[in-house]
Image (tube, rainbow, N blue to C red; front, side):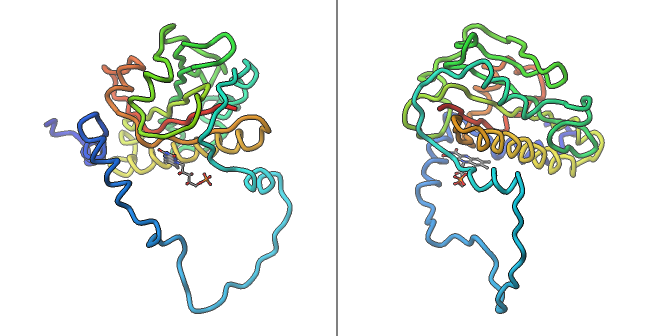
Length: 238
Ligand SMILES: Cc1cc2nc3c(=O)[nH]c(=O)nc-3n(C[C@H](O)[C@H](O)[C@H](O)COP(=O)(O)O)c2cc1C
């Protein structure tokens, strides 16, 4: 083992998913008893009611939800642009729609288009500065193939898989071990940006995929020789 390896890297390895431990992961999920889950803290005193004001964010947040059934309808180019604008560097690479610890921006976005105008079958890298797509492959896996390396049950066929890829070295170089936390917090912020974008559009829907087989996806995205970490997927469709 590399002596310089951070505990974050060890944690990442310990929580990685592959075809050998996927069944164990699924069993763990099915043996979980959700009746016992704690969703809120309880204090003896009643909470004091707060004013609730109308805001655009509240209006959108109210409609946000995960959806797991898709109609296999084509996403238009405009819809692809809208989804990816969630990650755009609006005011330079250090100022995007979501915050990042020390503007280290550890998150990179890749997409696998199943049914997208002009992009079906392609794998793309999103350039947040130019708001453009870089084509990584013209022969990405079909939904049938891709779903074998995703631990999720959906009905129908989604149109797009957005993949959040993390480069934690960008923040651990600056913050040491604590940079690992910051890296994952940033993925959460980027995820929320996408979630609200989808909630705001009347036609689009989707769901996060936590169970991606790390090494398979690194290979599909041609990132094997890099320190990319496959953090999360997000299926989008109509
Ligand atoms: C990190 C993360 C991973 C998730 N992974 C999955 C998943 O693998 N499969 C799934 O069906 N939903 C997944 N979800 C969606 C959650 O199940 C969903 O957000 C939660 O049940 C609340 O429901 P709502 O989003 O409709 O409000 C994930 C959400 C997050 C934030």
